Length: 378
Image: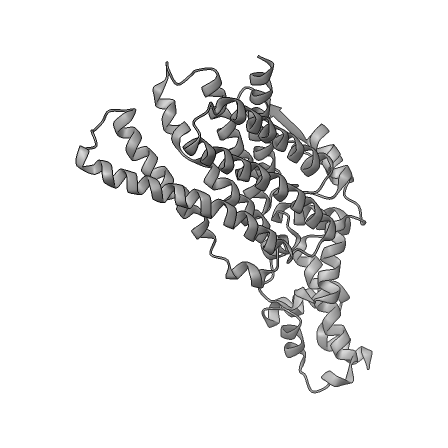
């Protein structure tokens, strides 16, 4: 009873935590959403184990359609994509992410095809097809013992491209725990093929470790703010901004978000990183720069980028970036190296997309047109 209660709590927590990561602007990003998918996958695996412990498959045989699918193939895939979405864009573009899901797709099609015979009885696989099924099953086994270890180990290789030391340490720990679980599962599964024994006790131990993984991710990722580093914002989010409806698992954001905004200060680590990107890498010179691109670089959502900029500067994202562009033009005007540049060229070099947007932004910041500023600065 206590054992199944722990599993049910972990299933529920995994689903809720995944929804928090997907729905909240504080945690949601292109990388973190794959961590949410990983938590959902672990929850499904644990739920299937609960069904087995409670013997739910006897009264509800169609649940075996879900149980027989090898969800374990998704774990290294989601973890790998979570990692590569946090690394440099150049390396990220080299990775063929869709390949990670081929083993799961193959496994799902194979098991569902067999269950349509064995479970649903919709059709009967002819005896002549038994040999083909065995060959396909052998391919399935080969995929499991090659794909899962390879992608898990390759994920370690990709971690070297992470620049944040603290983040790297946490992700290595997460990867090590998940990889250990996967290798233990493979060893137990392979051993059962050659030495017949009851898998229930060993699978129960693995299930407890998976339960621990979900609890640990919640503690480290949320309470220890590794997924969102503004500690005060996380505290306010968990205690005031988020309302969980346990009846339907809906997540509702506080409409005012006042306390959350008050927790964002100028020492916010994401804002500091944004300032460095502007000052040292001059990302504002990219005329196509938008909130989504900045969010991708920072590893947060576009909505959170806006909240940070609005709260700290009192202005919107577009004006924040335009201020840097105007300052760049002012520096060009005062620099003799650019004396042969006309004003429009300076504006375009600084990231403005047209003469109209350049002149409008420049006058808004300085109170003068670029020509007036150039004449008065001589």
